[in-house]
Amino acid sequence: MTVTATSVGESDQLEPRIAPAARTWAERLVRLLPAAAAALSGLLLYVSFPPRTLWWLALPALAVFGWVLRGRGWKAALGLGYLFGLGFLLPLLVWTGVEVGPGPWLALVAIEALFIAVVGVGVAAVSKLPAWPVWAAAVWIAGEAARARAPFSGFPWGKIAFGQADGVFLPLAAVGGTPVLGFAVVLSGFGLYEAARSAVRWRRTGEVRRAAAAVGLLSLAVPVVGAVAARPLVSDTAQAGTATVALIQGNVPRAGLDFNSQRRAVLDYHARETERLAAEVRADKAERPDFVLWPENSSDIDPFANLDARAVIETAARSIGVPISVGGVVERDGRLYNEQILWDPAKGPVDIYDKRQIQPFGEYLPLRSVVGAINKNWTAMVRQDFSRGTEPGVFTMGGAKVGLVTCYEAAFDWTVRSEVTDGAQMISVPSNNATFDRSEMTYQQLAMSRVRAVEHSRTVTVPVTSGVSAIIMPDGRVTQKTGMFVADSLVQKVPLRSSQTPATRLGILPEIALVLVAAGGLGWAVATGLRGRRAGDV
Image (cartoon, rainbow, N blue to C red):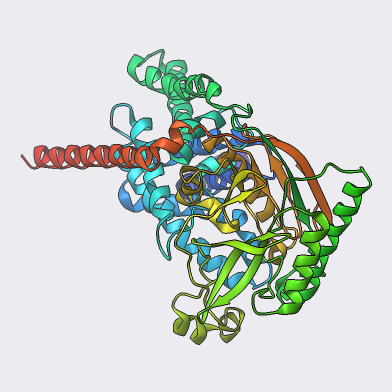
């Protein structure tokens, strides 16, 4: 009995010492839970993006983001938003460091995640307003609008819309472009959280807050109904006849930055694949195309200055007997241009398009002296800055009007729309992804082109040096595609279209409207907070 009494006494004496320690650890875990949830929900959003077809994962990812931000102060929201941004962008943009190392990749992500951090502050601020998912979704789109414009002319990669090429919301791209499509997805995600919150409250307390439940359910339902209603805007019907198009993927000697030192081999590969297709056409093994599309950088040897390169292209054009759009690097008046050249088999070069949205740190080097002080190898990679074009590029090829959107430009709303409003009946996105090896970059860019096809109701072709080249119908379906790092060609009859979707006609207006909604919600939240402080002071 004595032993038992002593044991009990000792236990009673130890309990007060153990319990506070346990409580401290539990409190720390509780404090860490929102941070872990923010980072993991960002990772979940990444998983919803191509090459995976798990588009629907964007909704629970955004629902968790809404949960961790609701009611937070601005400092906590800033940190949680930044963690969400890191969880999303670190894996999404890992391809930017494939050949140049982790430095540029980490720097890019660190900067881009700041935009999402600020969005987190905005979402937290509006999270207690009536119908908060609407305001919060608009805040997200305002953040994307800012990220698409700054710094260095913007970097829209990772827009929510670009993860929805396989999703039910895709037809909304034809209504108001990527801002409306993205808004619908984010609204549904926040609505999912609000609906779940209402359900949990009802289960725990039996209390039903009808307004909150209605907001959650409507935020989920309205975007889906809107997408179904927008389906008639998506059509593959030929309005201006058809065209038989050929895409040439010549491949490259080897992947990586060293691709650029193999310029003559790359040109020869594309000429050879064109001549192989021409032989198949003559043997009735392939349909004769009306025109041929080569990728970006298919002739990095300037054919205007180099007679040998010019002869290679002319031989290929005469062999196939139809116009070719050639991706070249051209120096003119001391300036360097990333150019598409319309090459006629009889007349030679007859038209050009100079890339307008050039890639920072790839085609030009901002802050060159600062970057050089950090790492001289980076400045060596971009010895001379490319210059920007100023005019849209619409080539008349085989009776069709083909709008040119070169590689990186596909991420920007204005560059694609300008070609359609300038009369393009179809769009081509010539690209060079060889410098990014077999990373997900190719599939992310292909998804962008699928969204653009629906946004403007146009066939979109994607000729790429090393793959994946593809033909995309106006409803976003990929009907043909190549493998990666193989020489191949695609030939298909595609519809030409002349009508304009609401997204094409409205242009930037839906984005402006959503930014104004975000501003209104933030203004309301700030005013409510100020009134609350004044009432507390009284």
